[in-house]
Picture (tube, rainbow, N blue to C red):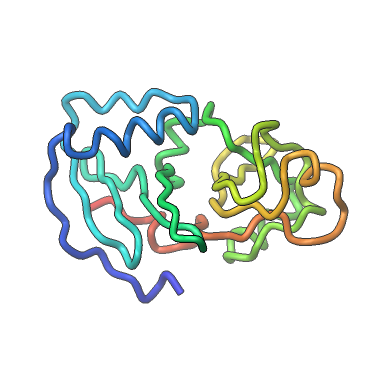
Length: 169
């Protein structure tokens, strides 16, 4: 799916033009992006709007199935903000599947941020090293993600093997 997409209309933007997006992202994830003085750009990537900070894709604006807009960090963004909220920890056995873009099954989920609700955008990380592996939409709240043993927990949207991961220029 994402392999057919290309970056289009990449252009520099002023901080005040994307300030609402950045504030939404900071409040949703409980982080400080600290982009003052950085070179900011926006571009289209398929149906998403990408935000580049100093030429690195750090965040994305996308829509859910109902058309509601969300701002979220890319995997590169999560490398710098590993203390962000909305995380799901998976065990070692789930990693090979996630690296190939598979949805995250609840059997591999070991822990989750207590604030997660059904339909939230979350990031999936390795429970041992806490490195980002994928982002996606949840199908359950955090207590169900941890307690369930069968079913799909997160619909994967972007993963380490995706070409977006390697985009930095």
